[in-house]
Length: 227
Image 1: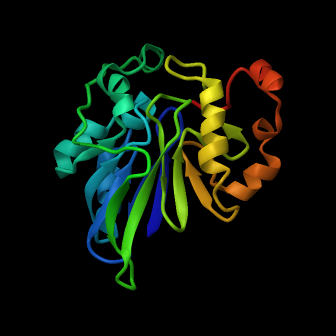
Image 2: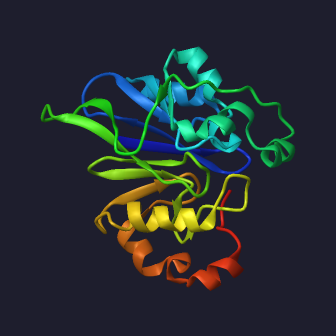
């Protein structure tokens, strides 16, 4: 599976396109901004967007979802625990952006441990994403894991973690998700977050300051670095 990204929007979001080795399809992950640019980028690779995969529902990750669905016909996937955000979104984000919110209705719900079929590898074997439910930043946040890499949304960043001070966030839950779902992965897994540069599980295990803190220190830290 291949992955490419562009950074756009007022919060410098990473917008991803991912696709299998073969065929003409691909998926958009968290298409919050510049929908036409993402569609054109897919077309430049000889691909069409046939799935919209959401790591979570915050407006800076979901603002363009309905537009993308209207223009491509692609179904929208997300975790059911994120329905409130998809329906109402967060008043703090809406106030910061000064934009109205168009509610999102999921076409497909995915749950922890389920897979999304992405197509075929060059050797003819299936390319899949495995869903890792990683609540804490939001109730229905997920990471999307394949053999070669992971798209982490706002759960884990290079040198930081997702914020847990927005409504629906919970620090203890976030760190349990990271510890039980992500730090159990091989050190070589490269992950691509919702903001900032990519990293590997091994690098974060060794050097991420948030992962070295005690619970008491984490309480003083208050929140992660990014939105």
